[in-house]
Amino acid sequence: MIENLGLDFISRTIRTTAVVLFIVFIYGLYYFDFYINLAILSGGIWSIVNMLLLSTLIRSALTPGEVDKMKVAGLALVKFPLLYVSGYFLLTSEIFDPLYLLIGFSILMAVVILKVIARALFGLDKKKLNTEPLQEAR
Amino acid sequence: MDYQTALGFAAPLAVGIAAIGSGLGIGRAVGSAMEAMGRQPEAAGKIQTAMIIGAAFIEALTIYVFIVFVMASGKIH
Image 1 (tube, helix red, strand yellow):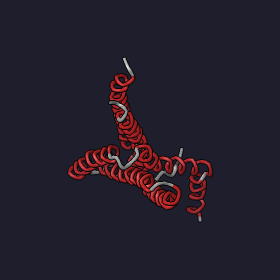
Image 2: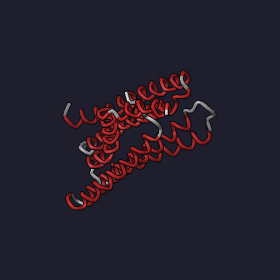
Image 3: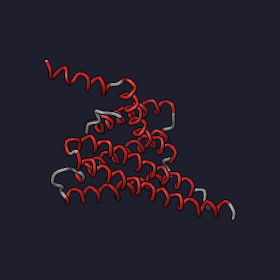
Image 4: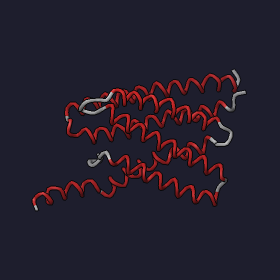
């Protein structure tokens, strides 16, 4: 179990995904067709926007304190129709191959899994937890 | 039943089953998260993050099925 799974984990994941997408795009310009590259980039951006809106929606809807109902309703109205309609148009357009959109979409999931595995393997959270009492004692 | 008819029946059915499955999954995740936040309000941040990641994975599975549906429906004539 990852102990130090703070709210900044998602923003760090999104930042890492954006960097990975940029690197893939630059390499892809040389090795693949432009439209394959564009499909991977679009899939990646789709997943990033999806994650951003999902996290904003959950943070505003599920809080121990007061919930701003108008904000939640507005976010839900933006997230679900806009994102699925844009996804539908991306998938049905002749320009993008759905397979490469899928690859782009999966990059964010791969980043999350790799980040969690790396934290668990290198024991980053345990190290942080072990140093906390020492720092307090000093 | 030929291949085209079977695909025509199976593809929308698969999307429906995936939607039901992910709906149940997200519902269960949100319910458990609310319960956990009620018990430990000081751990709300960690619970929310874990839930957001879980919800994103569940939603991604539905989107995968939707993409496969679009790919399969292109083969139905």
